[in-house]
Image (cartoon, rainbow, N blue to C red):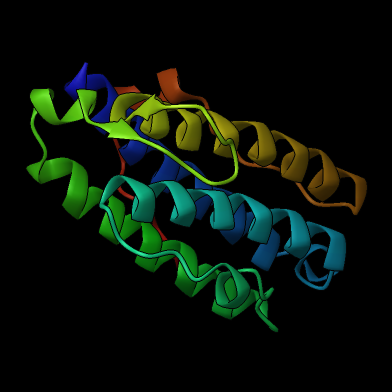
Length: 159
């Protein structure tokens, strides 16, 4: 299970970077506030699950501020992906069963594996919405399929 989750986190970074690059290359998309808000929401969730899984505090008020520029948002995605990769490279299979609790879902308990899966699937869903929005403003979404990524496993290209 750990190897699959590590692959999904690596793919998430690649896909996020590819989508962000496509958005940056299209002026209408790069200036689109709805797109930036949706991208930030996805990033916020990633950062939340990462901090929860690492037993670190999450500064909701600070984290909830949407960056003023797309460049700042891209930098936050890159930093978050780097931290995720560093973390999933040092955890072991047994760590995946560690239990997590969040004040956002009182009375529920999740494993680290489930938290990682949530972050990957949540990101996937919002990348799809962003790709649709990118197309609506005249841009062309990149190919982001996991199975295509597996062929060569390219690293994220943030800039």
